[in-house]
Structure formats: structure tokens, C-alpha cells
Length: 391
Ligand SMILES: Cc1ncc(COP(=O)(O)O)c(C=O)c1O
Image: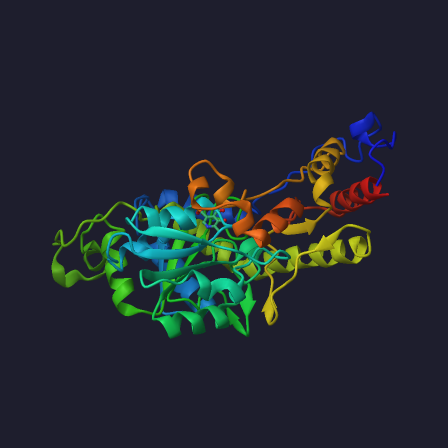
């Protein structure tokens, strides 16, 4: 790498791509537009409508899980995942230091304490070897996260949880369609939480789902997401003659029928969209392997990756320069997740020395664009820009 290289756009050279190549782009086609149009014209546009129910049913079948509850974000699903348990205030939840704030706020919103845990330096996943060291008599739960779509080591995490009688919330916000030991993610924890935000592999604009095999959890979440009412059966069961009751406190987390319709049409092509991502990832790996100083993220043993993000590990002292150089070439490379303890809101919870894996991962991580609508020219330009910079 020669940071003074005059051919680099950052030093005044010609950029590889004149048009910026975005880091994320949702894949939306005519079927999605038609589905939304149909839902609008049906005039059922408010929450928990027939399209939402259809999406929940299809997704439950796709994942191989009993209950899927569609809500307005993964953040809401995470919040509900803790709310439903009524843990005593100040009970502790183990949360990876390298995650999005939503994993942590879900516990905090429920008056729980979070204990940050270190992650592997080569993929940002919860370091299972250190996990038991964070467990105290006050621990009630572990939150595992599938960063980039790479499944966490759920077998080991569930075994540790069973040994200590802990509840496991699996934050699968990024890993829809990933597989761990032959099973789709979303089927391993006590509760899993998906995101359908516009950046995700399957999008409903904004949106999320709480997924579980536990009937008791599912029944209570149906009430909590619908303002504490038992309106769920009111919508499906004529016997109640339109009567429903206020049975708990809750919030308004249901999704519009319009979002449900988009979920249905997106789910029909999820496997295809994930395959397109995989083809791009495999091409990147083929073309970028062997570059001195550039490493790929490690995929968990026994896992298949949905390629939500394509991360590379670069020399830490040059990371921000490389990002700027890529951006100057027209490639909107990005960094992601500053470790929680490095953020103002969480910085009382630890120091760099306590999370060497998280710091090492963060200090080397850079993300390249990956999404089904990236075309061959754009993909080749991305590869060309990386090679130009690393020359
Ligand atoms: C690991 C993780 N959890 C939760 C979320 C929050 O998702 P949402 O925007 O649907 O609330 C995200 C968002 O990217 C995430 O990456």
C-alpha cells in the first residue's frame, strides 16, 4: 500500500467509478409494488391485517418455527422479548460489546442491567470461551447477536444457558436465511428477533418480528404489541362478536397491512436474493483473497451465511485512510458499530482493555457494498478500487 500513490482518487487521480456505489440498496421489484398497491386498494391499511397474518404464517413455515409475530422493528421485538419475562429490576443481561444499541436498550428499557461481553476478533461474534466469566447470581439472560448475518455459536451458548438456567434472546436482526447446523437462524434461542429495515436482506420498509416456539411467550406478546388488548382473537374469531378487553399494559407495535403485503412478496424471493448476495460474496472472496493485509471474516463452523454484510479486515492504522480512499474512488465503504463501551451512553460499562476482541475486530473492520441489484460493472469496480488501493 502506498498512500502517496498519485493515481489514487484521494490523491487527485481519476476515480474508478464516477457514480457513487452505495453500501446498501433494498431489492424492490414490480411484484413488491403490486403487493403494496393491492393492500392499499383493499382499504385494510391498519395493523395486524390479513397480509400481516399471511406473512407471519409464511415466515413461520420458512424458518420452521411455531410463532412469528410481526412488529414495527427489531428494536420493538427485542424490547418485547424482555418485557414478556417480567424479570426483577436490576437483573443482569449479558450483551456483546460489539452490537447495535437496540440489543442493549431492549434490556435497559425493562429496567435490567447490561453486562458487556467480549467477542471474537475475527468475526465479532460472542466469544463463547469468555461467556461464563460474565455470569453472576443476578444474571437472567444472554443476548446473542449474528453480526453481518454470521450465526453466533448457538449450540455452545444454549448449553451454557441451560447449565445456568438462563433465557436466551437471539438477535437475528441481520441473519434471515442464514443456517446454523442445518437449521435456519431464528429457531435456536428461546426467542429470536429479526429486522426488516430497509437495509436488511428482506425488507418491509421498517419492521421486525419476534419468533419463538414458546406458546406462553407468543400469547403474551400478541397482547403486549397490541396496546395490552386481546384484540388478536377479535380479528380472527367471530365468536367474540367484536368484543375485546384491556388485559395488560402494552404498546402499539403492530405493523400496517401495507407492510405485511410487502413482507409476503419479499419473502417469496428471499432465497433468490440471498443467492445473489452469495454469488457476489464468492466473487469478492475469489478476487480479493491473498491481498497482503486484507482478511475475510471467519464464518462460524457449521454455518451458512446470508451475506447481509460483506466485511473485510484491513490494517488497523490505515483503516480510516482506506475507507476515505475507497470513497474517493466512488465506493461507499463504511464502518459499522462502534463497540458499545466506546459510546457516550455506555462508556461507564468498560474500557478497551476489558474487550480486546471487540477492539481488535472494530479497529480492522471495513464494509464493502453487497446487495442483489449490484451489477457486474459495479462489482468489478469495487474489486478494482480495493486492488488499486492495496497495490
Ligand atoms: C444486531 C441488530 N439488532 C437490532 C437492530 C435494530 O433493527 P430495527 O432497525 O429493525 O429496529 C439492528 C439494526 O440494524 C441490528 O443490526
